[in-house]
Image (cartoon, rainbow, N blue to C red; front, side, top):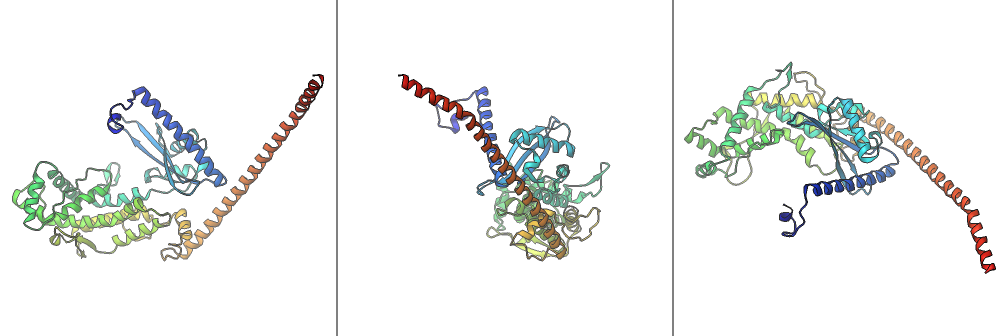
Length: 443
């Protein structure tokens, strides 16, 4: 492999032993760089915590549980946003307190600094948000994970349970997605897609391959599947009429598929913006969530007009107010999931509440010139944000003062130590000089 990707024949080939040694050496260099960078950053921040802690847990097929820990921060030169994966640790006990303790020990081991010294905020999925509380930090949830759950609930992929019994089942949605998946798989092998394209050519249908939802953990894969199938509706409807496949959809199911796709098109706003926004986005979270909730509550969907799709151009959409029963349920499920995750709703009924903002989001909104005058922030929220900022600035300034005093004290101690050593050396130097003069005179 090394010869293939390297310089060809003659490239050095590592044994397992030497490969392990090479990896170990590389990781040692990495940890030295991390320690150096964090020390510089701590000095720049005058001892204030500056990094965002990142963690997630998982279970291997063997049943063993692990936690992965990382840090995110801007480098001391303000040129790069570093995202560091520091460790993958075995975690037999996965309570909030146990994970917090393991995170702290890992940071000390990898960086030489405890968690409280480095981490000012923490992000995780909703199931692990209590770890931040155990670290005495504000509990915040990953926007991508939370936003993804809106679409999963809309399709029926996410169903809440109580006592292992479903609270909000959605069999119609699950059956529809199962048929759409079977359709995608059907055309993923053999020469069936070629036959589909031949039929589609007679009705000016595109010749776009169906995107099979191989990723089972992200609803974006399901959206890609439905989106691609609606694009090929003309060819697919003709194919199923001729060949009578097992996955064939009824007219009502095609309508439902268009409504599901339109709903997922709304919910993907939350996850897409979270993943691809390049500029600092601390103040944008509430706006993104609010936009999604407003679109879900609008009372209509912009569905793909499958009859007007052609080989050229994008997918034309039409606004639809009279949704099918499946479409209504799909939108309601996405809206309720959004309220439960963004608006503080803890019931199984829609409440229409607004999006809640964390302390960090409130402060970021007041500091960001793009959002400081936005109407989504109430006067009460502005007042709260102002008080939070005052508290933060006081704490930050106090730490800076303490840091400067400690630095001055350390410098004074170092200078005193140098003077003491110099004074201790003076008699020796003087004695050596006298001896040298005597030797020269005698000579």
